[in-house]
Length: 110
Image (cartoon, rainbow, N blue to C red; front, side, top):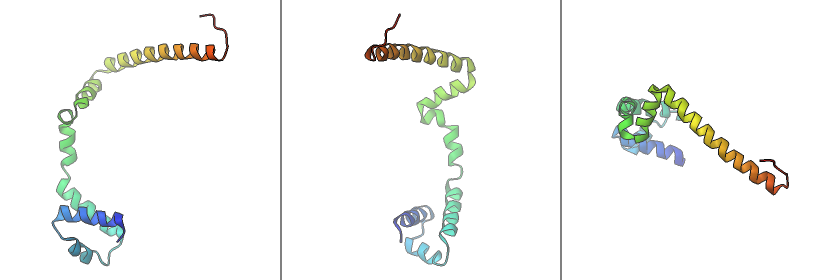
């Protein structure tokens, strides 16, 4: 058995409670596609609501989730952050250009 398929059998076994031997017997005549579709069905049946719970509790799970939630409801904050970031980028770029011009021997009138 190829390693990637063996890994899927371990996952299937862990989720379904069946032994790997039982799964090998059950899927002996199946294609890999059929096996993967069955595995997907088992995963969805067992963990289908997991994505809902993760989405619902996102800001508690991940602190940046709170920040994302704030930005989603405050478009002005997004625009302000973009303006501030743009200004910082321009300042850095200006200094970099001065350094590059100096290194290349180009005269500047700044």
